[in-house]
Image (tube, rainbow, N blue to C red; front, top):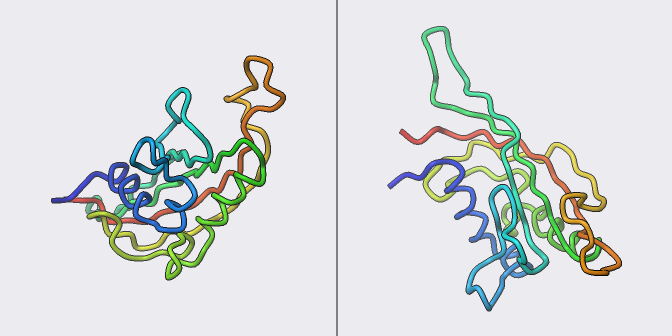
Length: 152
């Protein structure tokens, strides 16, 4: 059975041992890996990701079945140090459970290349302090391109 890219990416991320070791929530029995946005009240640290754009490759006679997606991984923590730990899990080499440079099966979708392009850090302005807290959410964002074969 093949999955669509977004479902496959979420499922695959939850199999990456270094990431799961950092964001696993025993109360949920699952890793805190969320497509698009985190659920309200979700614990930290966590990984949220979203597709900021995609290019469907074409030949003169039409689509070739290959897409390159631009994906932003938002590593979130209560402190920048916590967010950095999540980012470090992603930055590991693929043979050590990381993402950058990965090529292979991604939960039923074949990934030709996952390559990090840039990153940065700061405060998450979409998760401001509330109820008298001193700080909001620290954020390390990593942008990647993922070239994959579209499931048929």
